[in-house]
Length: 329
Image (cartoon, one colour):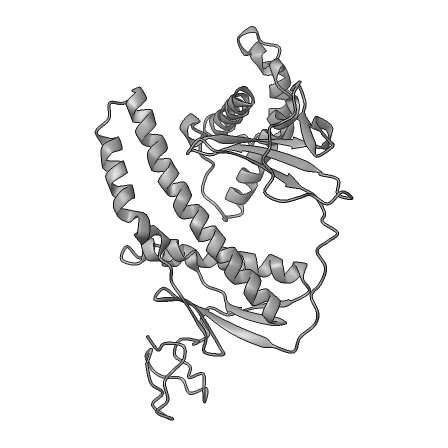
């Protein structure tokens, strides 16, 4: 699999280099069709003959992902595509023609043995996978993700409960019912250990084995932070979707907010964008209503009791004298 990931990375980087070169030297745009033809020519070259030793499907999928990256760039959604680096791990995507799923085992193209998988959950027998993605993380962990339509996911029973959600830093979530979910501060819990590991990494000689060991140690700490954050958010969003028929969330401009140097780390740690993403697709899965309101709606200045809007964020409502449930510390 490491050979496949290396070939995918090589093809992706060569295509990105040629597309960039064509634009700056000739002002020509090169699309997926042209890079796909280039891949055929590369495989005929003697110095790139090893590309024939792996399945062509993940190589083609890598070119498709590059095309998607350029589409998002020209649409203003992302930055210019970056070159892939070896220490970042990598992934290989196999479509239906490049793998076989039999007896709960996966056989990839040009692989004689099935993948040794420790399943995190059981796949329903009636499901037929459409895509298999094998990923190597910077920490050295291997993950495989399988895409399929799950017939067991059905809409939840209809309820008349609706809820509004305000996302914050001191409290991760505050609901219109007055319930609060504290910010677990995953990054802060591991900060000292991460800082120590990063200092150790900076002192290691470049390209040495000890530096690689130190890099993996840093990557493992980052993986622990990511895993704990995702686990908490999935449990939180699933609970909100199960208990409420309608969920209203503010449409925050997280991309602009993280530009604040004093709050960027805290905002990145709470992952507001991931919360709204999970709520959106889980509401779609389970037949719930997901509504995003304008980011300029004064949710943090509006009293949840009487609706009075204060000039500034306040702990108490100046009209009723009651605690403002959205901002009470």
